Length: 127
Image 1 (cartoon, helix red, strand yellow):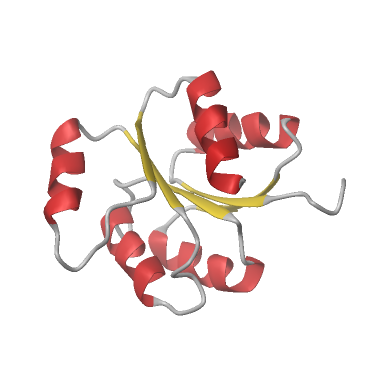
Image 2 (cartoon, helix red, strand yellow):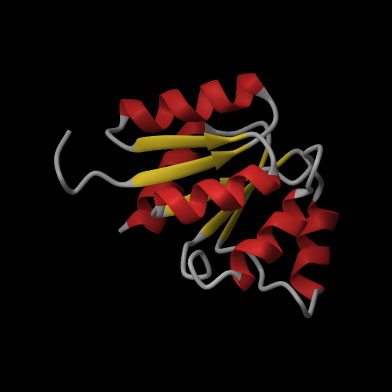
């Protein structure tokens, strides 16, 4: 592990999705931390200080849109780019871009994920 290693926080409630993203990232030399809901995600982000957060929208306990808002409002996490990865339609993208209380995410990708496009976006956001 080199010292310029980047860290990504994966926030998703689906174990298959977590495993998929985690292996894509670790295979590319990126350190990974995981949270399975929005509440846990904020605590982990404050402690781990990731360089990027991938965020699912439909999760139990606390929705991704609520988590997005919490990340943006918290001084410790407000500068971390948020990459939304969701199975929710383009309507959600339109919805999130029209909210006044939430800044649009840094990036957005729909499931199912194209691994090449995903890694390209992650590298772009990390550099």
